[in-house]
Image (cartoon, rainbow, N blue to C red; front, side):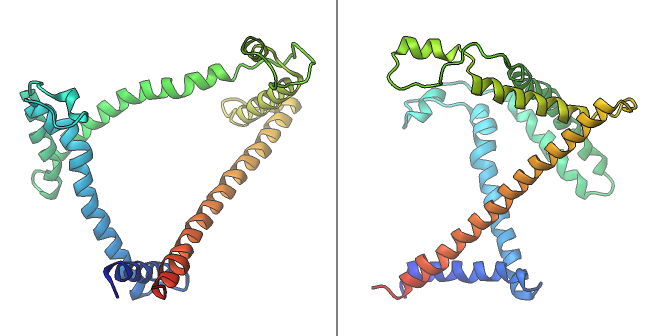
Length: 247
């Protein structure tokens, strides 16, 4: 058995060990669970340095000089280092004081700094994420033309002009969208009593629409699990089993 077949066999044994949890919890599953967690922890340490610390801290601390070896390094070639980045090192080490009973209060300092920076960034993230959605929620519901929507055989000028038109199908789609949006938002009116029948009916419609949406999300999640299962079965039956008996 060559190295490639041996590697695939180890992968199959590990896959079967993890899937043995479907029968019941056992030591075989526990072994591969701890093996997976250990490999993941080791990989995470390398990834933290190569993908985060080196690019965001070390390279900016020491700078770079000379001719870049690759095009990717050309952007930082000949840049001066910023010594102030060294101040981040003791702040980061304070997080490990959590293992000391006497000095564990110092671990709250980097946590507070991170929470403060994260909270400030989330305001901008929220604005960049949701304000465009609010703007896009304002949709026209009155059609400007009743012609059939088609793009075949149109010149670029005609295509540009048709993009500004609101066709009947688009208007109906926008109406469904707005009704869904208003109904779902009305379901979350908890600040005051909603005894009016119109509000109650809209709220109930929003509840059903939310259930439909959650059902679609759950269905896509189940299909994703089946996708992972199919990938593992392909690995076992095609890549390993058929490759094991092939020349």
